[in-house]
Amino acid sequence: MSEWFRRMGPRRRQTLAWWLINAVTLAALLAFALRG
Amino acid sequence: MSSRLLIPLYLIVTLLPLMLAALGAREPRSLRDELASGAGMLAFSILLAEFVLSGRFRAVSGRIGMDATMRIHQLIARTALALALVHPFLYAAPAGPARPWDPTRALTLTGEVEALWSGILAWVLLPVLVGLAMVRGRPTYRYETWRILHGLGALAVAALVLHHTLSAGRYAADPALAGLWIALFAVAAGSLFWVYLVDPLLRARRPWRVRAVEPVALRSWEVTVEPVGHAGLAYRAGQFAWLTVGRGPFSKNEHPFSIASAPSEGPALRFLVKELGDFTDTVGRIAPGSPAYVDGPHGNLTLEGRDEPGVAMIAGGIGVAPLFGILREMRLSDDPRPRVLIYANREQAQIIHREELAREDARAEAEVIHVLSEPPEGWSGETGFVDEAMLRRHFGGPDRAGWLFVLCGPPPMLEAVEGALRRMGVPGRRILSERFDYE
Image (cartoon, rainbow over all chains, first blue to last red; front, side, top):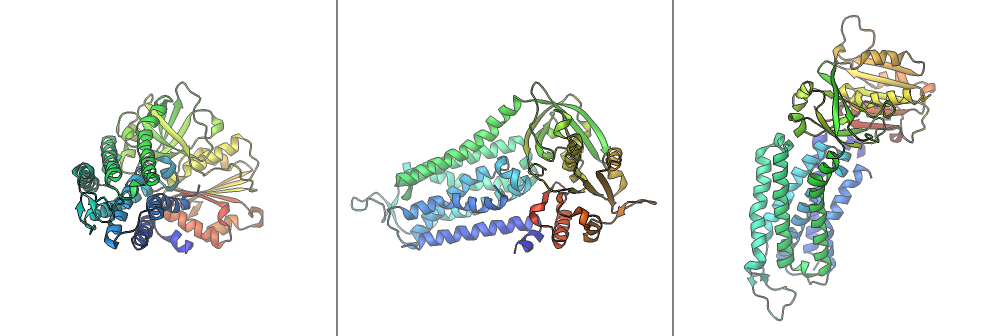
């Protein structure tokens, strides 16, 4: 995993980090809305 | 703190208000109402975190690089914008005055204009802020005026959203969450205040002056600056600093440059600058005597605390700058450890300080190996690229086992060299690397 991550170019790595942040953020939003 | 911790830390900070709201005493409402409130809270916390990701806040940009910080800032702004835009439309509950039997506002939304005007204004201004940044394009973020307008615009939007959250937010009626919003806003506004006001004032009190600008190789220059009325910079060989020079394009473009001088040389700092087709092309026109400002030191490419028996330095192009600092410091501080510099360039004319490197190579404890991918006729050094075979040839022997590897160069080269070193069994803790993405 880390080897694959290191091999990626910086731009793709930044885009991936953004989508990772988006995924966690949306998951947290859903968890918040569904907690009732 | 490692750069890898930045993403978890970022997520904790931006999700903290949502977590606090979930843990509070307010009963959850319908799915749509909760999605709406949650989206609003997330948009606000992401907006506030953007201040720290502004590229000018060096606690972050010093770790992951200026370019990466700027890009993440731009990408995450889209997330905040999307959440902010859907926020008002997700609500299912009707707007209306507070009902006495519903003190926590589970059944109706605040409808009063006094509580909503700030939110509406922010909802209109945020797309303008993000849209202008996207339309103006990447090169313009360098200019001070644009940055200040963008920063003040963002501060205005954040202040409006804070007002909206505190006056209309159902969850922000909880004093703990209200306190958290105020604290996060204070940190965001404080970071702006620091970057635009305190930091420049502190730097203005520690001025520098350009002593010399000299060509040192094809399209490469050495800029020497000296402190004016102060002791200089407490740095370690191999670190970098943000440099601002004169009143030309260089003054508008703060950029990190590696320090090529050694602390033992004295208070003057030497920077190596390569013309890259942007503002760096003006470096040769900088007049000696020009005022300069130095912000630093930053970076962890140093030998401090390293007790490996030898040091292998591998540089690509202008990446040699911090390694010059390390080589010179080792020489001046009589460091007895053997060291080898592998210095890769495309052509011979790009080699910086060739005579000094030849003198270094003549020392018993040092060796300098030049690598050219386009060698001239009769070239006796290495050719091609720094690959595993070359690294094994120079560092594979038992006399060079356990050495520290210090790398600096363009990312593709670093990735290739790091991969080769790992295949040779060199553990990551013995590899220090710094990439420069300025090309």
